[in-house]
Amino acid sequence: MIANTPKPPYFAVIFTSTLKSSAHNYEAMAKKMVNLAQKQKGFLGLESVREELGITVSYWKDEESIKSWKQQTDHLMAQKLGKEQWYKTHKVRICYVTRDYPDLSK
Amino acid sequence: MIANTPKPPYFAVIFTSTLKSSAHNYEAMAKKMVNLAQKQKGFLGLESVREELGITVSYWKDEESIKSWKQQTDHLMAQKLGKEQWYKTHKVRICYVTRDYPDLSK
Image 1 (cartoon, chains in turn red, orange):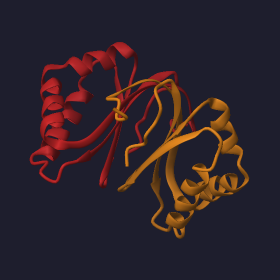
Image 2 (cartoon, each protein chain N blue to C red; image 1 turned 120 degrees about the vertical axis):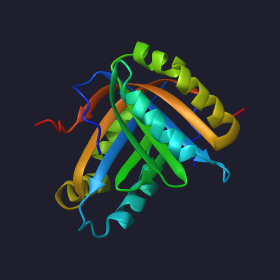
Image 3 (cartoon, one colour; image 1 turned 90 degrees about the vertical axis):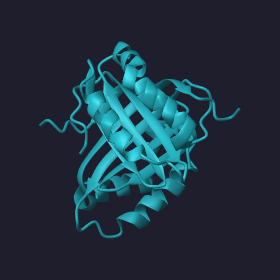
Image 4 (tube, chains in turn purple, yellow; image 1 turned 135 degrees about the horizontal axis):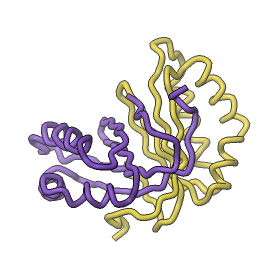
């Protein structure tokens, strides 16, 4: 459940959102995007939880991987649908992970 | 619900955890820690969601603020209890937030 990321440094994208009450088909698309993200170059892991607020953190090898994922064709469509139909509010934060603990690989 | 953070750069602490089935009094302590964090110097905001996995992201002005919060007396006690009694697994990631979008203050 906790992403098995390598030793820092690496990158994280924190995606926070609240959904409209009419967010039909959101769950299916969210699952599809998780599966697709896992196949991208530089993908290191993902953690996702939703109550009223949803937080999804994806981890990446470098900024180039993050930019490629943002521009992936199916992901572009999902981003468009998200803004138009699903998200009441959303925020994306691009981060450089400098350190982490404990080392869960031990 | 989404933290109203200032323009980057700023810092984020991504705290991910799963709880033991016997995590008594965890919720009360978690709420107390959120209230306490909000009073710390350099605190910028917090987002927290829990299902089986819990993700709490706190935002900070600088690394010094993060270090001070980590050493705060009541927080030290909560960290100790967390490791001993509540968390099945946990991970802390310290991040430098380089950019974010959209600007929700507009």
